[in-house]
Length: 385
Image (cartoon, rainbow, N blue to C red; front, side, top):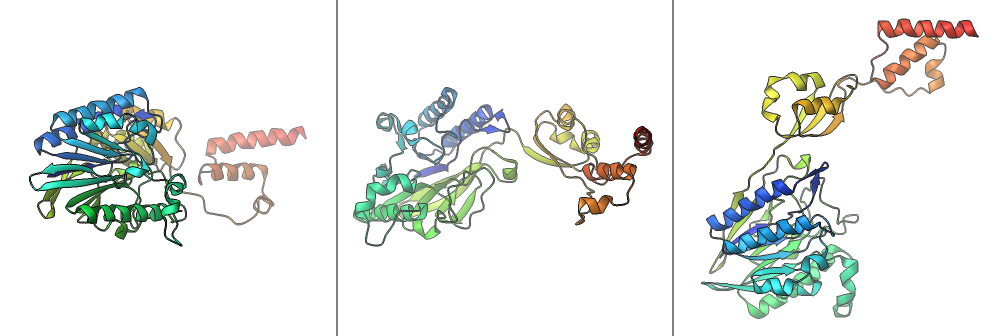
């Protein structure tokens, strides 16, 4: 059986105020092509299908179009809700979609009710674990807990449900796949995953997922192999400049008669690259080496000693997709621990103004022309006293 592991589509997410729907559709179309090319049997999507709990109608259109195309390409689909999704909205009509081979798992009680799909070697059981908020699910299982066991963290909840999954597996035997949306210990996040931790209490140990032949994780946007059988696929699209060096794609997982077989990384296209440029504004605008970045999403870090006027507008004349701007002057004023009154003691009014300009302009005091103007103003003030 061939399984394509993806996650974190975040349909509807914006990128610094820009819609990502068109770019995401390009990537999802390529994912459908991969399903057909590699003759994939099952596509699993491990949470955060949408970016918002209240998706717009056009976001549903993208999802419907993609799922329909995957089914037409010959693969079944199993997807779970993540912490960004509304489980109720995503799971609406899941009973009907399951009849067509699109299985949407959003209810907490579905975690040990596997979707069973057969191949030439027999059944494969897919256990979908939707994102389980401890405060919302603990009351369902409080009476089933052993003495001293609690469900107050994501790690505790996942430990509990994985025990139930392993119990079900022991009863049926055979091969199995688990989908889960979680933050595993020692995985480096980017700056876009919504925090589901509280003082480290919701970091989940890798050993929690012992047992299944393959664990398809979601939540972290970068590809990660925690063990040969436990992996993150990452998001199919870049949603932050901190992700710019992370590949985009999905895992192609093969299960043979004995369990986990080969695992291969399938690259997906990047509709628009992300580039971080650093330097003085004039240099960024004139350097011919920057021509290759003109169609990229650009994050500019300006190092000018004096903050340039209208910098973003000027930047976008060359880089129309410039999205962020940060000012980090190459020369900054040294820290002074003296109080303000100590710093200006015995200084003339002109010198005080010059010091102020140096402070707000990162070490650049008044020019000769400005000093002359300041001297005239100070003189007029003194004469009027």
